[in-house]
Length: 536
Image 1 (cartoon, rainbow, N blue to C red):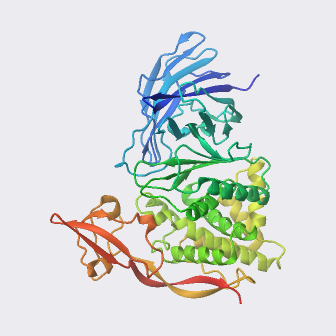
Image 2 (image 1 turned 60 degrees about the vertical axis):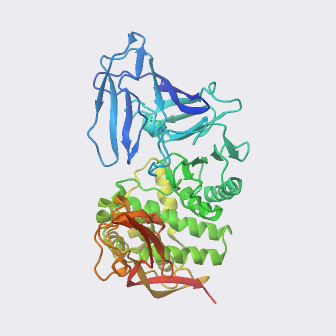
Image 3 (image 1 turned 45 degrees about the vertical axis):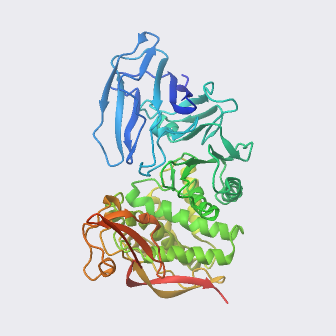
């Protein structure tokens, strides 16, 4: 029996020179759906961002027997999703044909930044993650899939691209995997100008940074990382989106082989900062453990932090001075984060409400892995390293095996005995990791140093509510005159607060109708930490 298949066509539409949405159609063969099945599933909300506002009666479906009547339902919300479902009201027969229009999400200068998944217009072009607008069956079977573009409504020369290639793409994937894809169509520019099969970076608007330089950097880095991680099937694409609001940052999707980052006229990262961001994100193509984010984020983010530094140093992409500077910046961020002593489970519970918790797995994972690598080298007298564990996990994943926390514990125990398990458990419980001063020898030497922790002097939720609360009596904020109830008119984004002393922040506040500014250093208690310098 032939495997089930799906042929998807994406047709962006434009009115008055601005994209209005994508008309989506697909033909499904080789699957029989009953009234218990879901023909189309689409998030109403995903991680706080609106999915495409497809109307309840906006989905039409037919099969070999004619029109398929559809019922509509909305799932109970979860912290990540609220799904809408369209269900057939009879058993399907033969080829199923579905069509609907997914309108773009309207964003303005007042829109709050969030994950870059929503279907968005950028002039006559569109960009999105498929998870926000592709309403596909909720089935687990692998499908022989074709995803094609109909660009007839776009200006001449328009291109259609996804994170799996330009133009029509053929692949074998589940319906969910098909949605875990980034898409862009319109007057697309790219590096290289004519991308090959394995790498491309794409954008719709002229950028304020050197997009071609960033693209060249990531292309070279990706090739080097493919060699290190022994990738048998390379392919990676980066998408750039311009915001009408103040914001930057980026988003990835599991298994997407793509990444999307944003910028705005008011807030553009430097070319150097974008290189650092994409160095980290590129590692995510390979180093992912399976499981609950609360249990595996330390690995997924920690390995990206670790290898984005170590591999760029090993391959000469950065020099020793840059390496030390970046490592010490991350050390300040790790030891200076006052919630780093929470357990990983506790940090996960406040992940979406406290930005400091979002940084926990990055620093914790990186410095734990730095320590693990040193101990494996010592125990094996230099014959083995962390790299060997990472390669073994990759081999297992490529062989279709489950690679979660149990696999990590098995491998680390084989290298370091029960001490390996105990040190892993201590890290997960929130115990500080202080690697050996010799962990990066002979090129670098560490030293213990007291590091000041970040402390703005009031509740961090105030940045989200824009009203100051929880001012600590005698603390930093209190000393410069900040009071509970002050309105925050302007402030640094929480994730951009400084990581080390001698850097001040300025807040514009309002009280009794009068605006005023305060400037101060947002630092508090001293804690033991590690910093590094070049040896000799």
